[in-house]
Image (cartoon, rainbow, N blue to C red; front, side, top):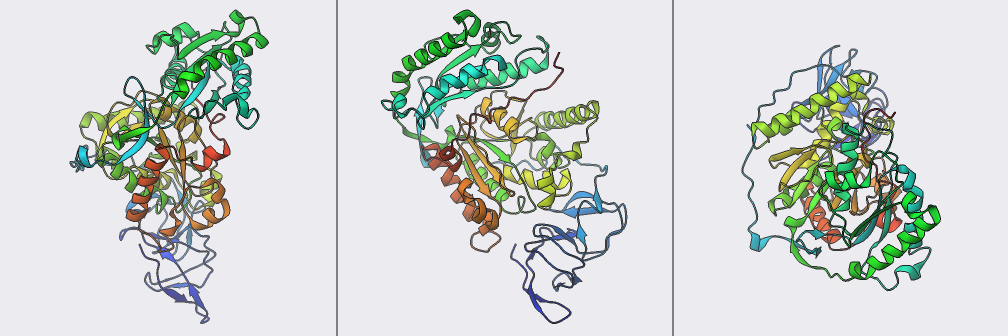
Length: 524
């Protein structure tokens, strides 16, 4: 996708108009720079009419009201008014509409050429007693209910290296003590889906390989009783999983003291680990995009997709999520499903979301945020088509509900909201030991206990906010690297980060506040 040549305005001034055509069938091209009225795009045979911001769309033909508009060779919306060639295409003249999608179950599924086990890429992981592999080594504090959040944070704060470096000085192999608190756990249906989701999420974190040990702290009278939480998740209390409540312990001060004492007793065993060489098949990577822009589907998402293809070929697992952000593009995944059953599972989750939004009087097209739109994305269809690029090109092998344990190797889908902290929380609960997060507007995010790698979609963002970014995918637009080259670099970054190299979000201390289990249902 090379940029077009230097163009000339009618006045004779030379202007360098960098635009990209993504598919021969598209009705738009994407501007890489701000373009002014009168700029000529010779290869398209059009003259720009009006101001076009970078990352936004320019019509390449006249489009009548009601006609579909294509990007990536797919429908991204319908003209809400006549659009002339050369005009800006955005929210003022492009709208959602109904159209048929051919799910063509399994028709695009192809065998993946796997790398032989002897030639698989490796990383330096932490192998737990049961054979699971960790990329980090934390002690976690979970809460059954919001009422125990304050004591959990007080206990974790006692072990903060930036406040009390002496607390963990003798335990260099422990990455930290983190409190993952939430705003739920009571005043919900004790037999309902909301509690089931919360318990599944907490259960996934309680047995996550990146936690060497876990405390679960409750108040005592909440709906989400700890014994039932453990029972529903098949967990039992042992030396590395301890539970207690504020009411049974005797109040706030005694609870904090007890929590500190228990963690101090857990630290020697947690520190007694070493990294060893393990195959990349032990990586489970959650795929996220947040603060997307018009470049996301051109640079960072395809780069991550190229890395995912390599990960799957080397035996690893990638979790695509954010169901509202594949809406309108789900047919591209059903075609890659390994079976009709898997494809129909995905469509069933789409139908659930349509019903869910209707019940709550919401429009699923409200998903693009103000920042998404400012960056050039107009409809959820356009956002979805770019977002799916994160998943690469291998087969879709399974579909999971929120926070379900991910057991399949390869590319899988997990049903989650599009809101990044909620979505990534579900992925980590399902077993993701690494998160890869693309952004065009500049999201600031981390996800303890799993490290999060941030990919910038454009060089301007990289230069402005490199303090939060790990890889600049804007070099694709700048002609300095190909998607395949950066995909290989991204795969190596996954391996390096899994081996212990700290990401930018880890250096800043992100991760505790970003634990956000999905809350649905009535609060009574």
